[in-house]
Length: 356
Ligand code: MRU
Image 1 (cartoon, rainbow, N blue to C red):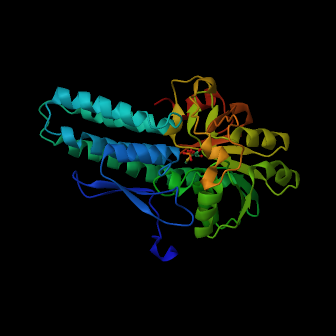
Image 2: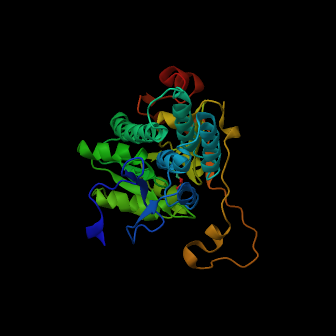
C-alpha cells in the first residue's frame, strides 16, 4: 500500500484547467488505505467536507475554493448579474457544510469578492478568474505553513517532549501543516523531539492521521488516549503542548478539536507552555471573544458506534460537540505566518496582526 503513496502528500489538488476536477486524499480511509477521491460536482465537495474526507481548517478552505469553481461551471455563460446570484447560492451551499472552521468562510468570501471585482467589460472567462483565485489561496497556504514552521520552531528545544491533539499537519492544510509544521521545522533544525499524540476521540484524527504523518517524517511519536495526558504531564514527559486552531477570536480565545480546552487547563496546572499555531485566516475579527464561536455538533453514532462497532447501549442520550473553546489566558503563544504572538491578548494580537 505504502508504495502508492507519493513522497509529498497533497491533501487537495486541482487537476486540469477550468474544465478540471478536484482530487482529495480521503482522510477517512487513512492510515490503512491511501485513497484519492475525485470531485466533479460541487455536491461532491460539500459531502467530502461534511464527512471529513477533507478536514482541518485550512484544507477545508482550499477545497471549498475549488468547490466554487465546480459549482459555477454550469453558470459560466450566464449574464453577470445572474452569474453573481448563482455564486451567492454556491457560497451559501458550501458554507453550510461545517460551521466552526472560519477558514471555510474566509475562502468562500475571497472567491465571491474576486468574482464581484471583475468589471463588466472583463474579457477574462469568469471561471478562469475563479480558478486563479482558488489556486492563489492554495499557493498562499503552502507559503503560510512554511512561515508558521519557521516562526514557531524556536519555541522548542532539543530533547523535549511535546504533546499534540487532533491533526494539524500536512493533511489538514495544503501539505506542511501548522502545529506539525513547527515540529517538522524544529526537526529539520536538528532538534530531536518526542511527540505524544492524543488519539483524539471520537474520530481519532491523532491516532489515524498525526501518528501516520509523524511516522512518515521519522519523528518519534507515542500514541496515548486523550485521558492519559494528565498522567504524562505529571510524569514530566511533556515540556510543551502545541495544537492547531479552527477559529480564533480577536482576544485570542481559540476553538479547536474537542479536548483541546481540557489539555490547556492541564498544561496550565502543570506549568507547561500551551501553544497554538494557525494562519491569520483563522482569526475571526468579527468576534471579540470565543463565546460567539459556533460549535459543530456531530452525529451520536460517532461516539456510540465509531468505526462500525457498537460500544454503547441503544437509546443512550449522547452529546457530541466537535470543538471546544480554549480561553486566551491558557494560551502561551499563537504562532502565525507573520509572527509569534506572545502574550496572547487582544491588544497584542491587534498590534502584531493589525486586522484583515
Ligand atoms: O474536525 P476536524 O478534523 O476538521 O478538526 C480539525 C482540527 O481541529 C484541527 O486541529 C484544526 O483544524 C487545525 S488544522 C491545521
